[in-house]
Image 1: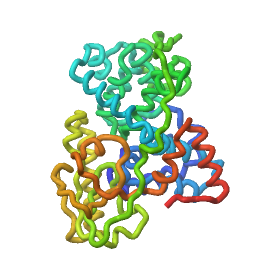
Image 2: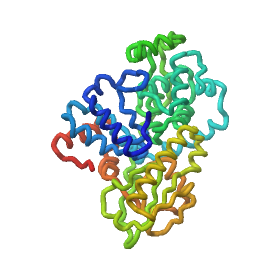
Image 3: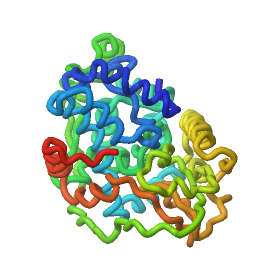
Length: 388
């Protein structure tokens, strides 16, 4: 259901775009099989397929106005990444709080994760997440709102649940979306799961089978988030591209970017050694689900096969990035704020390879998303495309 190879992701994209013109009208409907959305988020999140490529494929096939909503949804992930990159303290605070909550899990947290709260549709979503590693975005919002505002559980624990289970679990998108639902991201704004909204967008058969407890969502009330202040952007937190070293290079490949061969530049011609090494110890630290680990291993295997074709006889797969012998000639795709960056040993800093969107767009995520999107959309419509 969720492609774990680059070829399968490209094929799924092509298949999805055959009906891509219907996305804006149908994307919010939660239906079994999720055919109204692309189901490419795990592949995009781990770089088997890039946001650039998916956007270009959509814009090559349709007018901008026809697929604007699909392309806009793709770039939410980039916006969140840029926002968090300039505010790394938010990620650090969440990881610390999530770790503390994980060691003292309440009975209600356990029941919510197991799908035993008595609100049948929310329990269905919890079980679907654990069974498939995926939830429709609308279902994620409903469930997060139910967790925070109805069950009154810590948003950090809910974000931890999603991060452990979601195949597309992203340090930025996941953390910041939960903050937004809880009213912590944007002062004066939180999100509520309303019965009327569920009844409008849920598949009728799915709704009919899970009506028990819906009355608890009749008139939801937002939990007071307390004092919320805007966090200013720190442009200095963004890493600046540095000149690559002279001579042969060692390429380190990690699970944040599993198609490094698509990164622009002439660096690839100088690669004499490739080390494929994920932050496997971090998977254990965050207690990633077995399903998530299996998907990641399959995606890593696909990357290994492609890299062996590109760099025959030069690819070595390691169990964990701790096994990498760092030297001054090591290069790697820049990993955004998250587990890979955190797992790097002190002093282990390769020369980063940046994608153009990281350099060009992250600094634009200083304010809200729609200001960010307005600037990006205007550039595309004016023909100022940088997608590669």
